[in-house]
Length: 336
Image 1 (tube, rainbow, N blue to C red):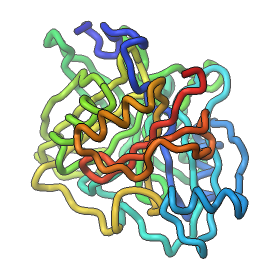
Image 2: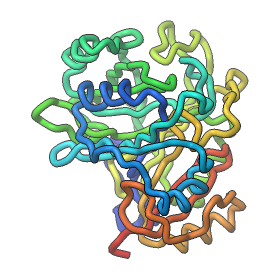
Image 3: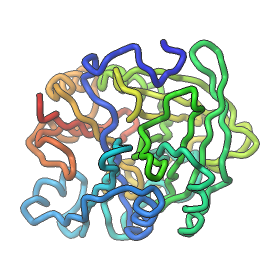
Image 4: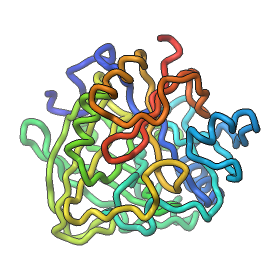
């Protein structure tokens, strides 16, 4: 392994599933999410789309909506410099249950959407001006590299609608950033997403055996004196970073807080419930991914089908649940 886990030994040709393409974020606070993503993080937008009656015949069961539910969706992403992971927002009624009922890092399910930021002090002022203060300012995190060396990475955490966190991350200049940055505003598109899984061993095995992801860091540490995710000092955390082969960004973070994990109050961890409720990827061989999923006994929500998932390339998709019950969407690359 390279001294920097963000520099792969593998190549993109080794990947059956590519980097994280889209994070689905379900909310009842449309204006709050727009303010955070458009004004705070400088993302672009596809514009809101209300599915037609014909589209809903396919998409309602796909996302778990009933015929009486009203919903609309929009893509938030960077075009040009800083382009990376898309955030697909689905706007629903406030009566839809939330996956995370409060700001607490111990709840299982989707926790963060994280972005590279060069100037976190400047960004904190921008967010505070929007009425979106950080949890505790810029926090320095110590990590160990593959060869035992330590380095400090800066993070800043902002609470967002549905009790998730929007992160800004700055790695030391000697390392590559967590994702490409737009030089005009020193912010890039989303680079990764994190979630808390009570059965992290099974989830990590799923990422390896089904998605073919590389586990480039798997460590355990104790929460320090001040936790940006509002967790008590001394709590243990397993911290896993998983990458598509050949990739430097668009990665996944799996956390496990062991006996401190709190189960969500929502019926399950995916759509249509509010919060981070799906991760989506592209694949050049959807049928092989499906075969792998079957071999590993993964729950299949939707077999490979010609479903045009909103704001995703291609028209053939596979929808799975990983061992924690979190939805994983795989879309077939248009050049496959």
